[in-house]
Length: 527
Image (cartoon, rainbow, N blue to C red; front, side):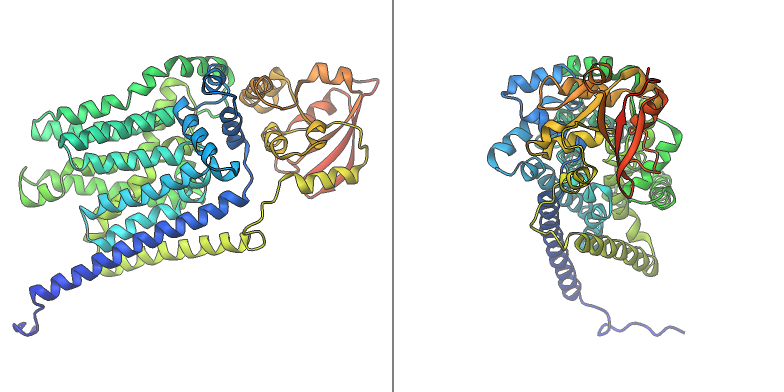
C-alpha cells in the first residue's frame, strides 16, 4: 500500500524551477560544446583531406576569371548547381588563401547553423535535455561526417531548410514568414534539388488548412519564394538536362532508395531503415492520436498536428524524391534529400518525452556509443597528419616512377580519379597525367556518359588534359595506363578491358594492392 506523500517530501515549485534552470543551462552549454567541437573537427578535415571529383568541379567553376565567366561555364553545363552557390564559394576563396579550406568553410559554418536551428525548434516542443539530444543526432550522420566539410552546397541547403523550420514554427508572424521565404529561396539558389524540401512544408500547411479552415497567406507566399530561383535559373537547368539527359548516371531505383537511409547513418540499409521506420511510425501514431484532440485544446495547441505532418514528411523525404525522380526521369542520390536528417532528428523531440526512462536511456546510450566510436575512428585516422596535408599524388607518382618509362604519358583510367590528380599534380607531372573520353564506349561499359561529357566541357575552361581516344592513340603507339579498380569492379574504370578487347597489349609494370600501372602497346591486331 502506497504511503501518502507529505507536503515536506513533495518538491516545491521553487525546487522544480531550479532543476529546470539547471537543465536549460546544461543544454545550452552542451550545444555550445557541440558547435565548438564540430568546427574544430571539420577544420581539421578540411585542411587535411584532398578534394574529390565533385569538389574539384566546384573549384574549376569558382576559378573562372569573372562572375560572368562562372555564368558562361554553367551555361555550358560545367556543373549542376545554381550560380549563387559558386558566388558564395568565390567570396570565401577571396577571404581565405587556402583553397581547400576556403571552399569548404561555408559548409562548416552551415553545419553550426543546423545545430542551432535543430535545438531551437526542438526546445519549443521538449525540454532542453531532449533538445540537446536532437541537436546531437546530425553528428552521427553523413551530414556531419561528409557534407559538412565538402565544397558542395548540400550543408548550406540543409541549413536553409533548418532555419525555415524555425520560422515556420512561428507562423503566421509576418517577419518570420519573410525570413522563411528568404531561407527557402536561398536553399533553391544553392541547389536545384532543394525544391524537394518544399513538399513537407506544403503538406503540413495543407493539413493546417483542412483542420483549421484557415489560409495563412504568409506561409504560402514563403513557399512560392522557394520556387522563384528555379524559375530564374531554368535555362541553365534545362540545358544541363538536355546535355546530360540521354545517359545520366544516377537513375532512381528501388534498391538505391532503400540504401539512402543506410547512407544517412553510414551503414548498411537495415540500421538506417530501422531508425527511419521508428521515426515514421512514431510520428504517424502521434498524428492519429492528435487527430482525436479537439482543435484549440491545450495539448493540441502546444504540439500542433501540422508540425507532426511536417516532421513525418521530412523523414519520408527520400520517398518524395524517389517519386519525383521517377516522374521527371532525373537522378536520385542521398545528398538530394539530405534534409531528411532534420526530420529524423526532430522526431526525437516528440517521441523521447513519451517513452519510459529505460527506453530513453537506451536511445541516448546508443547515440553516445555511435558518436564515440565514430569520433575515435576519425582522430585515430588523422593523428599522423593533423596539421599536414597529404597530396593524393605522392604515392601514385612513386608507383609510376617504379614502373619506368618516364617519357610516356600516364592515362588515368577512371575520370573520377583523374580530376583530383590533375588538381594537385605539380609540373611536370601535370603534363604527363591525361584521361580519355569515348562517349559510345562509356555507355557500353559504364551505362552512362555523364562523366565523359563533363570532362569534355572542362577541357575548354580548365587546365586539364582530356583527349578523345581516337586522336590520342594516333599520336601515341604506347603509353602507361593507371587503373585502381583491382577486383572492385569500378564501373568508371573500364579502359583496360576496352583496350584488351581492341587488341592492345597490356603489361603490368607496377602493382600496389588494387593499383596497377600497365604498359599499353599497339599491336598488329589493334583496331
